[in-house]
Length: 129
Image (cartoon, rainbow, N blue to C red):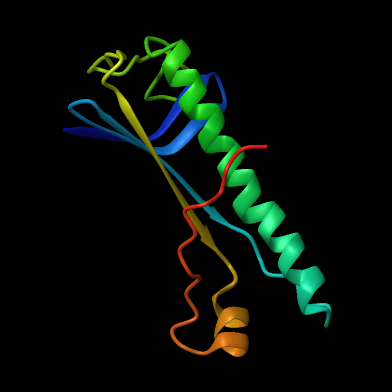
């Protein structure tokens, strides 16, 4: 198992926030903080935050997965893309991808509305349309 934070696909273009490879499993993390809007309209606030925090992260994850499948040899550990990953990623029919999305910024509003810890509920049903 190995992992690298903030890997890049081209100069100045981050691939993901954390990349973990353990055998045939490739785990791609996206971690975003977006301030939750406070304009008095809970439905509008939620849709705006969800779009900026969750949908943007999901698109980054799907893009990272596609990049790794197509170009596993073109992943770099520095922002200038001078240093390739020290451990190459072998992609084959047994490779499994796991996408992990972490979105911050809505805790207080979630707590105010739902109580509990202010944490969002886990939803594994997101899919690309």
